[in-house]
Image 1 (tube, helix red, strand yellow):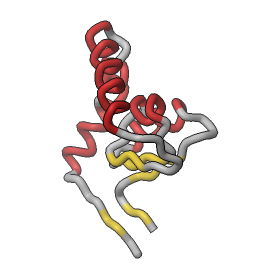
Image 2 (tube, helix red, strand yellow):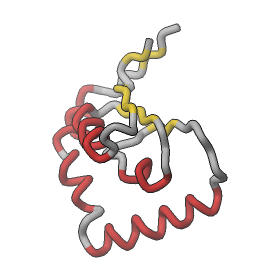
Image 3 (cartoon, one colour):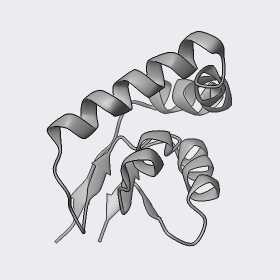
Image 4 (cartoon, one colour):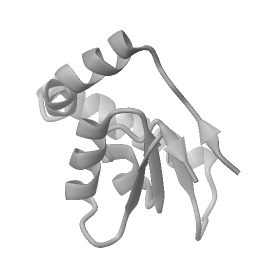
Length: 99
C-alpha cells in the first residue's frame, strides 16, 4: 500500500527555509519555558507506550522528550534535525511517499 502526502511546493520550501530558526526558537527563554509546559501537559494525557508515531515530528524535540519511536514529516531539513537529536534510537520518514 502506498500513502502519498504532497503539501504544496510553497509550503515545503517555507518549512525547509526556516527549519533551523524554528528549532532554535525552543532554545530561547520564552520558547524553552513554553516547551517545558507543553511537554508536562502532554505527559499528563498520554500513558506509557512501547511503540509510537509522531505525525509532524518536526525537529524531534517533543518526540525526544516523550520517548516517541517514529517520526513523520514533510520537511527533510527538520527530519535531519530529528535524526541528529535521536541518534541511534529514532526512525524518521519523509511524508512524501511511504511504501
